[in-house]
Image (cartoon, rainbow, N blue to C red; front, side, top):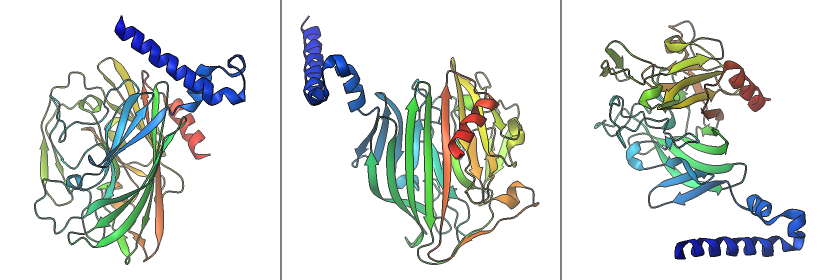
Length: 361
C-alpha cells in the first residue's frame, strides 16, 4: 500500500507543478494539465555521457540508439539501433555477440560513414583486428557542438577528423544527426559535410563505402552455400553456410530490383524487409538528390551489409563507369541520408516512395 501512495504523491506533485507552470495561460478546463505536460516534456531525449563516450537517444521513454565514439572502434558509430518495439536491427558482434551470428568483418558495426580509399588510405576496413595501421585511416571524434532534445525531434551536431596513422588530418567532418520517432516508425537523418582542410583529398573509386549498416542475422538473405568475400587489402573472409531458420531478409530498390541483384545497381532508395521473432520489420536507406554520385550505387550484400556507395562507381558497375572524386584544399562536400525503421509492417514500395518524395521535396 505504501508503494501505491508514493506513486500517487509523485503524480499529484507533478500535476501541481504543471498547473503552476501553465496557470498563467488559463484554467485547467481551457488547457488541461495533462495536455500541458505532454507539450512541456521532450518525447525525444538525448542523454550525454562523456565518461562512456556516448550519447543515448531515448524516444517515448524507450532506448533507440547511441552515438558511440570510443577510440577503439576507429570511427564513431550509431549502435545498437532498435525498432519502436525495442528489437535490435543491428548485429551484436563484435561488441555484444548473440548466438548464431556471423563473425566476419569486425569493422561492420552499427551504422557508420567512411570510405575505402582516401589519399590511398583505407578507412573502411580498419578495426581492432588490424595491427599494422600504416595503410589505414581512422576517424577521431573531436567534439559535441550541439545537443538538443525535443518533442518532435532530437538533434546532435558533432565534429570529427579523418586522420592517417601519424595523426595528420586529411578531412574534417561536421555531422548533424536528426532523430525522430512516432508510433511504429523511427528515423535517422545523417548529414555529413567533409572539408579538405590541409590539402587536396582524393577519394579514388573503391567498392568499400560509404554509409554502412550491418544488420541482425534475421534480416540477412537466406544462404545455401559457403561464400568468400575479399576486402580492399586483399584479405579473404570465409562466410560459411549457416542455419537459415528465421532468416527472412529481402532487398528491394526504388528501381524494382530485388534480392541479391540489388548489389551494384543504382537507386534513390533501397529497403530491407524481414521478420525478427514475430515482428515484421523494414529498414530503408534513402539517398538525397544533391549528394555526389546521385543516385548512389548500392553495396548491399545478402549476408547483412547494407551500404550506399556513391563514389565506388567503377567497382560497382563492372567498369562501365568511374568516379574518382576529389576535393581541393579548403573545398567541402555534403552527404545527406535518411534511415527509416518501420516495425509491425512489411513496408510496400509505394510507402517508401511516398516517404522518399516527402523528404526530398
